[in-house]
Image (cartoon, rainbow, N blue to C red; front, side, top):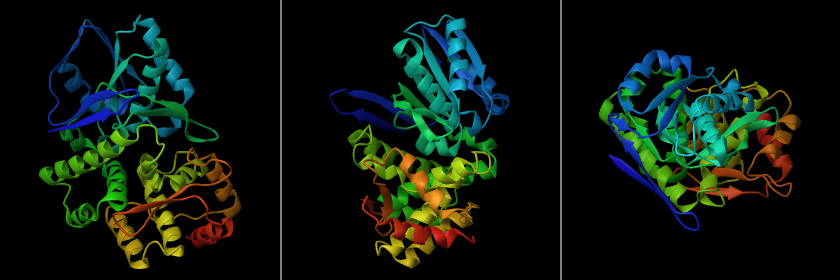
Length: 349
């Protein structure tokens, strides 16, 4: 199954997202695989058996969001220099969203840009993070504030890699699937309410529909000037949750789950969404084992963190909110008191 990415001029880019068993990959240049010890222990032998290259080198970086930093990117760059990569060389991101983001960012920097491909091994990265060319790292001010839009040459999504994925990681990926459905497709949301994603065919269908929606959005708006910002539903709130908890309490998808519940509460307050619909979304998330509550210790401080969000500009916070299930609205003129009133609902969660 192939889902094409075709970005429009002035910088046209075309590549394919393949959803199927990993094919044999042959390269005539030096290749570095970037992964982490967890993925390497489970799947590296399988990957290496599928690759032919004059030089094939593996770089393992520590596992976890807290290591998604400039320091880790520099360590990958150092390996590229040690192996004498040139401008025709290739990086392969083999892991979840953290690995994909850092590998892509490293590729954008090395000798002003070399090719990379994505081979995602988590549900979250397969349905979202590996598609669309967002790369970057975190710092003390927030998540993904340093980075670049840098498209891969290809994405290979093999659902077999998910067989060893812990249930918590699987659920975190499901949050991004729910995000796509709530923003764009009520029928897809209804499918997810009944779907058994332990069934391989239903899982492939969920991956396909999410990737097709993501590709449709990215093809229209690579650099988030318009509709692509809608993909940040749940993230404006979720990124603050991650920052407050120092990236070591919640997986990214878990924080997005909490963020969607918060965004829905704001949408209900503004009359964009019925309370029953918000409860419907919350129930789907909870049934998947995702967190839906969060205790905000300081509402004013939480609110101030919104201004570090990349979508905010001119001292205005842009919120991505559902307008019912299956449609969306971007709003940047909500009174601070209204937002804080909603945040206070989570003060005693």
